[in-house]
Image 1 (cartoon, chains in turn orange, green):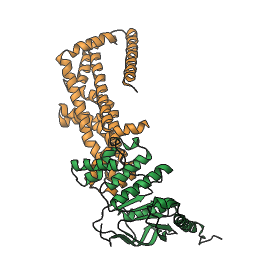
Image 2 (image 1 turned 180 degrees about the horizontal axis):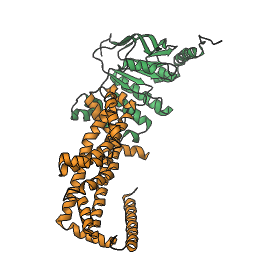
Image 3 (image 1 turned 90 degrees about the vertical axis):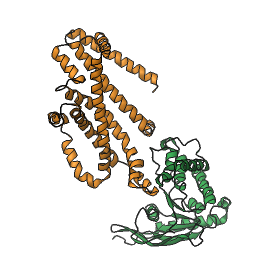
Image 4 (image 1 turned 135 degrees about the vertical axis):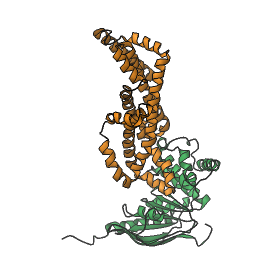
Amino acid sequence: MKPFDILFRYAVAFLALLLLWQIGAWILGPYLLPAPLETLDAWVQSLKEPVMRGHIQSSAFRVISAMALALIVAFPLGILLGYRRRIDRYVSPMVFLTYPLPKIVLLPVFLTLFGLGDLSKILIIALTTGYQILVVTRDGIRQLDARYLDAFRTLGGTPAQLVRHVLVPAALPSAMTALKVSSGTAVAVLFMAESFATQSGLGFLIMDAWGRGDQLEMFCGILSMSLLGLAVYELCHIAERTLCRWKRLENRR
Amino acid sequence: MNDVSAAARVETLGKRFGRHMVLSNISFSLPAGSSLSIIGPSGCGKSTLLSIIAGLTDASDGGVSLPSSWKTAFILQDYGLFPWKTVRDNLELPLQLRGTGRRERFAAVTDMLRELGLEGLEQRFPVQLSGGQRQRVAIGRALISRPDLLLMDEPFAALDAITREHLQNLLLDVWKRRRMSFMLVTHNVAEAVFLGRYVMVMGGKPATKKLWLDNPCFGDASCRNSDAYFSLIRKVHDALEDGEVRPVPEARS
């Protein structure tokens, strides 16, 4: 698809959303749903203030460092479990028993253990996204065609070289997809984690404005959070396209 | 390699998978710098034999002895190129695994690209290549570490007739320059006679050496129309047929 086509489609989708929003605003009235143009205007104005920028910065820092942490821990662990069946046999049941547990319910525990600062928030987001990356990476390695392992054996290399030249590149596409898909969950968890016991972040801003009955500010917060989610998703998408170019060529066939 | 007495020796080799005997009592010796075609009905264990010679599979009885200084390279049936590496990266991998410096690797790969007619394709991924080009890359990757013995498992089976002939000629050209020993497993009688200084026909259950031919026509394109060539082909053919019409020993009542 040409870049112009993509841009055009996004523009159409954006206008359609604005239209739906406007219709909703007419029906519900300005107290429940402020009109889109008014909100956009207020949002642009709010960006000029250090308060809003500060909230965006805290939230962006938390979600991005959490996802980076998740990738750094879960990706190697997923490769290890996928490749070493003996370790997998003992660790996997543990992973799969805890996988369905909604990690967000551990938030109070994390707040108690790691304090009210950034650490507890980053850890709870990392835990949520990390699980998805771990499970998908492990499966990716398990499904790796054995002929690539044979091919590597014919060339003769050390286990470290196997990891670098075969396992990491083979598992990367599925891990990047998992990261991309989990970015939505990451932002949702971020909102929950920021909605109490803190004074910074978009989650705080939204809940605080809601408490004060300031609909316009609340919607500015919601808009910022949506755009943050979109930015994180696009960031993952670009990373995926750059790191796994071969996979895209393969799918295009 | 210039030692006249150097040879790849296979002695009373046998292979069992569980209680199932696949190969039995195979012995031969291939002098350095010559070639062997291994031909036999499909599923008779030819690939297993090659894999044992390559050191990827253990023999159950007997064994293989190669001169200690020999390096071997193996081209798998489906080429075993890594889809996440470009042509250049695939070609340089064996050198990289051995710790060869970057500059030397670059020069070696550039030479190899020229030798195999792959110039201009170095930045492509395997998925962007034709079957013949992919096979050239696989040959290049095997040759780049300058092996003394090249093992090939049905290297040209997936190619169309014309590409197949081109690559057979290419292999012979390379051989004339480098004089490495090579063994190839094939289904194709004409290919076996064209590329094998020696031809071994395998058959029986468990499979063993049925016929060993000294082939004067090896590598001689002009020989392709001579009587000697056709009589060799007939001999190989008869030996193969003989296996198929062999009476079934345990007849059911």
